[in-house]
Image 1: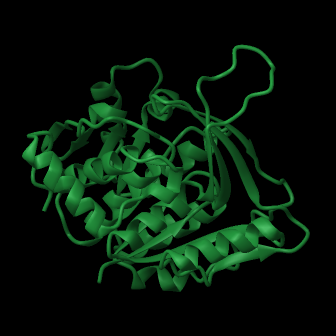
Image 2 (image 1 turned 60 degrees about the horizontal axis):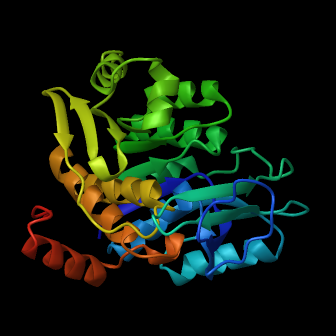
Image 3 (image 1 turned 180 degrees about the vertical axis):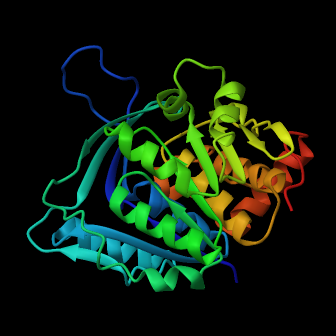
Length: 310
């Protein structure tokens, strides 16, 4: 069983199904509600576990009720959460998320400054025991340490290169990962006003990467490697909820990388898992299992909407 070490943030999402986003301050009555663990690294680890991989998460949560829920749900999904640190006196990260019928979302996010950012307690010697690493940008000190340890150990690594309030944190992390996968806004933040292909080539040209790519929602993804520029189209689905889609893509990509798949296979598989998630409502709670992905893939192959992924 291939193992992926995920490092970064774990929060608790409270998700409200809305008819539409408000144009002004008002009271809105939701059509549905769900609550579950969330955050890029946490959702990535759940994706790995639900897709049959061995998932480990290194993260921090508060010593509060939300922290209890986060750890319990991670363990319930098969994630090794034994290294999720409980910080006494701090509150766990929390998000309120509004989702409209077209699958778009709006987030209100709280991150407690008292949630200690120190990463000195991480068992970095354990990094070499994993087949791949996935790091997000929400806990930069830990991601820097783990990505550097993975480089030293020869373990392939994926950086979920998303927007951050500290652009320098993203800039510091990009050189450390073997596989850098930007969101479109983060790529623009990193390279300025360049077309995607030129931006990817610029980052790849700095050296040290096997793949530099960008996720493009329903349009799939694009990347640059030693062979040049490539694109992989997305899987067309009726989108119900895009919350956690990028997290799921990165988790699936890291698992495929851990299994030894090439860049095209990693991208195709990650597109499919993310699309299956978007076809269901509920944020991270709708991350597909192996059986659910097989059923989804079979249906969409029959419709000619996706390619074989394995």
